[in-house]
Length: 270
Length: 270
Image (spheres, rainbow over the protein chains, first blue to last red):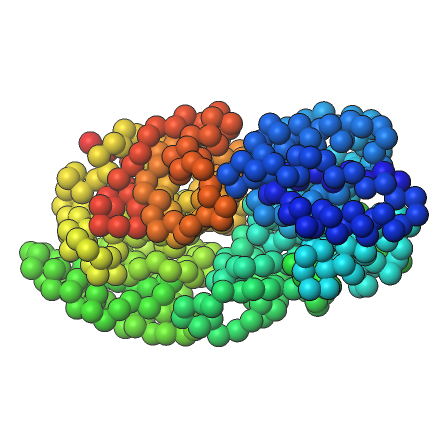
């Protein structure tokens, strides 16, 4: 299996690329190709919009590539998502796409276009504490569809997003159909008042109100609220689910950390 | 004119209440009543949802009240907006509503319900440098519809919002019709990557794409971007307007500062 790594958002650290190359090299039948675009830098981004889009479209069109693994999150994939999805070719349709966080804009649009996508750890995650196990989980799933890599509570068609990314893709060209879906959300570095406001927005969506249930992944690195918020992220999420008539299904093993598990979109998993 | 102050978001500072009471007391024909709910505190908010909603509904129903002035922003008006607007009474329809920032959720919903609303300085703004002039502008407009208080570039039906608030009200019960509107946006304390992402979201909206043009108020207290963003807020806004086929109409004199001007919704101004 040939896995191409591109960076639609921010620049991949060289150390992460080196360590993931070693991990992939130890797997039989795994050819990992890190596109040089991953190391470009243009302000906030891993190269200009044209450079990031060009690299993504190049690997999407490459018949020799089986899977596209997004290098890392940050911000920026939304700036090229609509153009990348304007005409999805047959070779692009045959691939698997893996990532999370800011890559959620692309996962949403690719899933909407009919491609196989999954939420899961990315190469830059190898730099986290326990990051090698996280990255190994993604390789396990890409190479063998190992059920051990999956989020353990999945029981029907699922989609997983960073909550803030989901809020920002509603009403855009990449918004997927969420009817009947088990929706998993996680977030990082957001104040609790922002989590509350984003849940207000997300749960007001007519599309989101058609989900089967919602589960909450990790909400990490929460900045201090001023004044003190007085409850926690799960209370917030339960509250907005109840207001919107959405079933709350408990916690999920996804997030910006090493326990982040793979969630294939639209699948009934083991 | 009797003006009632309530706080649908965060707690009003006593010093602000005192200073605005003095300013209003010096105006002839101005009775300012600061509802005691403004000084409640419950976690992040000026009282519980029930307390904030109760005070708002009380003054909305009060036939002796001519105008409702929101005390300050922060966060929380969205949590009570739909309930406050569930059955707008005849006395509530006869009033004017003034505020901005987080109060935008209410301004949007009240405008949608057919009430007279305006974006403009709030009592807590008196604590800013130059804040007395800002608050005087709101009093001038409430008491005499003084055209000097208005944002000077208005040339047709307008609406004004905090950009992040606008993003979070799209798709909710308080989203107003924006067709043909001159849309003014401002923001505070948001990283430039967030401004970019929010503009992506807002300009993707089919409703927003029907506006007449967009103008950009102040974007203040922007935290440092890491890495350096490489452009500025106006470049960001121009870019997304161009992508979405929205006319960009230049800068506007609104924002989280003392130059913030009054923008009556849906009016053709002088």
